[in-house]
Amino acid sequence: METFSSRTRVNGGLRYRDNSASFLVGEEETLKLSNRGLALRLGGRYKWLGYTFSIPVSDLGTDSEVGNARSLGLNLQFYRDKFYLNANGRRTIGFEQRRIDEEVSFRDDIRFFNVLVFGFRVLNSRHFSLGSSFKQHGRQLKSSGSLLVGGAINRQVLLADSLRLPFNRQGEVVIERYAQSKITAGLGYAHTFVIARDFFLTPLAVAGPEMRFITYDPRGASRQIEKNMVSVRVRGRLALGYNGRRNYTALTVAYLPSIDNTENLDTRVDETRIELTIGHRFNVAD
Image (cartoon, rainbow, N blue to C red):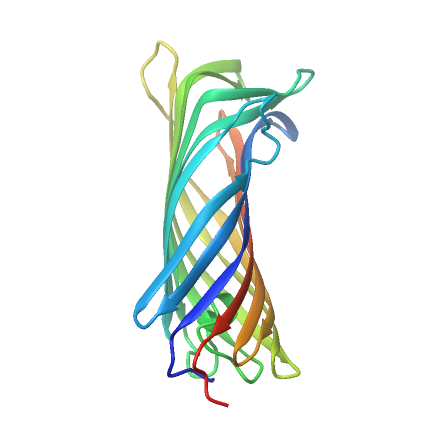
């Protein structure tokens, strides 16, 4: 490992985000809600203070002829030698709606709230660093990996004036609210491959059981509670790039799929984030 006495750095880049929710009957996708966005990132660190600003560039696929989505999020990340903790929340208003045999429409009454807290315990922190790959806090000089113990808590709420959902046994039901709470534990592994000292590739995957608690509000009826479910969940991340002593560039990908089947509803919620970062460290000794 190589750390730097100077913590002053600046970086910039782009962030692509894709949030989507799909409702299925069997294997057939009958309704899909999607929201995609591209943002410009400006960030850095001065002494103990780290900062990042995101400036929206485009709501991809939702131009003025269809509708304009709005999204507001907060993301906190803590990279330490022995653990990683992430807490993020996002409110998204406005989604593209795609149904079978119907034209794409834009629904500005649909609101989606997502809060996720998750973390990893790095068991081989002496030789492996998550922060070096995903945030370029330092440099990992030799290839090495580590087992990870992880966990997550997730809350998702979808609100709409009225939304027709496909039910497995009842055809379609009009709802005003759909909510999921999830608790996940997992075991995983990450490995950094160091190439020619300055280039790196770090894949990461964590898998484990997830408990789900689901409720929905049919229009004009009382809240319904689905049977609690347990399933296996797999989450992955990837980082690759160049991490020199002064300059660095990295491409990081986080893919957080969620496939949830119950007696009445089959849903899939996907969140994909892709970030490109280009940065420079100041006052680094030769």
